[in-house]
Image (cartoon, rainbow over all chains, first blue to last red; front, side, top):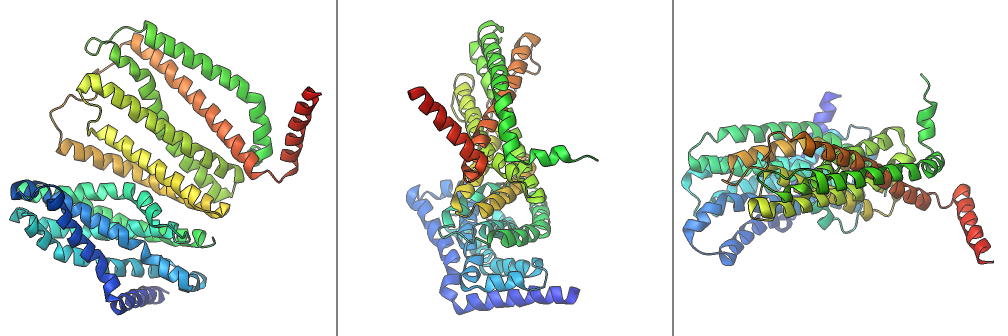
Length: 227
Length: 255
């Protein structure tokens, strides 16, 4: 039974990664959004590096949050439309592992690239160097949290035709604790404080989210896909 | 154990008939309490040493904030009961609680902003409690938006019940993190709690107002739920009879 469960986790992880590999342009769009939107900040505010440096940690975190939120809506939409979600629901296995596999794939496609590309944004917004490592660490843990929470919203809105804006409304309040501690980790690093403390809380949030969110997603999918 | 009362509670007809009997009295009680509390608080309670008369908005602000939070938990509890026992009435209460709670949260924020101008010098301050209330308002908006997004009533019920429950799990986390965030960035403004302990002369009318707001909340919840009952049960016989009776009585008057 346990072996079967882990098999279904890997099967769905592999399947979603493969699907996005075949549509690389689509998979890359959150990343491109992340970089493009960061250009709006100096254009809309000021090119002055000193003032950009001040707000860089917050801006990068906000943009990472938005990029994750915009991409998470498609997590179950494709499967719902082509009917494979229904097949998953009526299959005899426990739903939690495939769901976790799908969310993990989402993080590997969006959260991880965002984390890896964030130093570039830090450079462009002239963020102090001490913030780079805390930023990458907090983004790695934080975006995983965002993917999990966002997947709950995606499951709630999967059967709705225009769920995109609604998903944002539902998910954004739930994202607020993550961005508080994510932004704080970077700020602590820049200020020379012990930044592992807020990072540890982010890790705790991620642990709780890994434990609870797949259960919530699985039950939501069973309830709302009847529509 | 005798669970008959619990099952009877689940009947929309029973709820409708009972509230028809009790609502006038409850409404009267709410009116008396609110009127007493307002006149007492606004007219007779002593002035605050530092804030003068502007503190009197507390008599609206505090009860509204109390019920804004309590209303969210009530909504989530009603949703949980609906999910567990598949109770129709419970979903109706949940649906009725959302707009009332959102309105009370907005009232709390609004009175807070009006109060903030004379005391802090600005309408909006990023204080921990204000920010938490704002997030609570967003949580209410999410539930409301989700409720109206579905065409299928059952899916709408279940989805918003689950969202309300997820919000309940998150409320302590949100409150704690906002609190921590605020102490981290604490600006040098005046703290919200200016009076460490209230004078009894000020506190007693506040207590009356809180009780009055609770009664008012129950009245509003019952009224909203009754509308929802009539809407959802419109195809049942008793609603038809009720409407027929009303039509008959108005026709009788006309003749």
